[in-house]
Length: 141
Image (cartoon, rainbow, N blue to C red; front, side, top):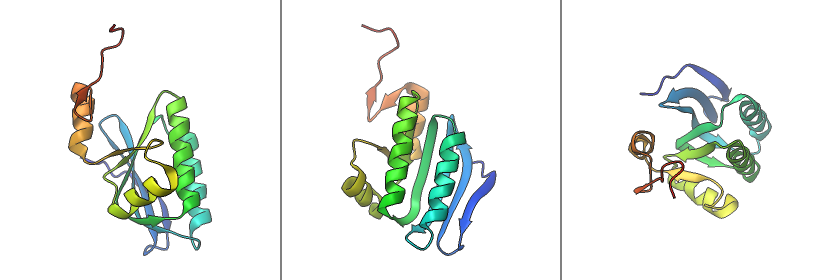
């Protein structure tokens, strides 16, 4: 289902990669590996660059992401805030356990929504459900 169109960022192939694709109406970034002090500046530059050019519906697929430092997590949180301000959304799709724990600890669960599976994303796209609750129709009382 993912259309892996091009690799935007490869920092030390063993360390961190970021690949852009699309899924339904979302732009998806598959993030794999680790961001630490050795590759932080390059990763932050690429994340900021994509934040400027991407539409407001972005999913960061982080099932293969091992860890990120605090600066990178904060940049992602700012991207989520900017997307929300543009009437869009940035979500974390299938976060690994370590990434989920880091987000909860350093960013806060309230700032970035975490979606556990593509099936949940499909329900939202098709039926307007979020966490098992149907979204109200526009203009409903």
